[in-house]
Length: 509
Ligand code: HXC
Image (spheres, rainbow, N blue to C red):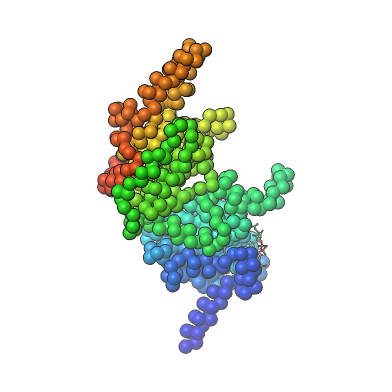
């Protein structure tokens, strides 16, 4: 009986983390505790904890007198809507959630199990970084976690929630995961903090300005989304997990759907304005194609000239990449290329088919783009599409010009179904630019130029030249796009591609 009692006593002590005062301090910052977060993330009563009694082994600086059970991180597994996930949640109330040798070992244990059992890893980060009293043992612990992030990459989905401080080298574990979610006003990430920045560069900046959720979702693109509070962020991770396969050997989950596969959307026939220079909202098309209009957008606040995210078609997850004519006329630039390339590679790694919606006038011109390496960055997206072997369905709605036409999952990059709306214009460039180059001699005769422009438009401002060459498989009615796209993906469910052996590719980084 005493032993049973001891178990209960020890459990109760471990569950209290750093004690009532520190829990109250955590709550006063608008943050939940490590355990409260796990409870909200997982299905009710599904959490099974590991290593609840693990304590650190440090004997320096009097540390042997303070050995809290669990060592500042709660680890284990549970389910999200019935599907297995592994989770670690750093407990800021225990030594600031700092990472000791044993804290790191706890994280590594569940990462190893996640890879072996093929289930996602969700890391909740809230930590003062390396446990200062442990010195290099703490750095070693981080290194072990980093190595596992790399090994797990492309094997199981890895998701990071940033729910407090994440500074110094500690940022590199989340940085190597597939998605990073932050909480507004209570989380930050930076390699060097405001004080060091001030000393080295004389810049005065707050932690929030330097590495808060707004900075990382709008400026740096380090984070994929920012949420108002812990509760919302955790709920959104649950929603994301529903779209993802458990590992790279499984297909994404197929969910019951309550939408008509052949739903006709007559409004799409007038989505593209008559004036080719007028913008329209590509999100409207995505919503109208998706089952129940459900679109899970990734990096909504960054490079808004391209849209990326997940939808379902006939209940199955599909990754969407779409040019957005509302921003920069839908041009590809460095940021858009990087954003979309990473998304395409995630989808390909996890067997998520790709739907590409194209309205792209080309790459953004300018010295800032060229000096910053748009050649290499644009090549990332080209490379990502070309290497992707998942089913690829492309719909051109309007412009598909030049190199950007090829990049955007064209037939030439092994697109499986390449559809075009009747409003498509597939050409090397717009009619005006083309005329000014090929009829340079007539530049001082506006009438002739107008005629040449008209001739070029008549020839190329339509999908039929491309369709005659077979690089467009079919010209489709906008209103029937959902049906056509659903049928295309359904026909590709057994797709298999054999590529030559290589160790790995050398994507332009
Ligand atoms: C040990 C730590 C700690 C750490 C915080 N604590 N960080 N203990 N190692 N790294 C402890 C504090 O002593 C305190 O203990 C409790 O956690 C809460 O910390 P506070 O400072 O009271 O909290 P707050 O005011 O909210 O400030 C949070 C903080 C600050 C900004 C994170 O604690 C801080 O600056 N910590 C040090 C951060 C740091 O320099 N870490 C090393 C970075 S280098 P009590 O007992 O009072 O509750 C690094 C490299 C990783 O991480 C490399 C990987 C390769």
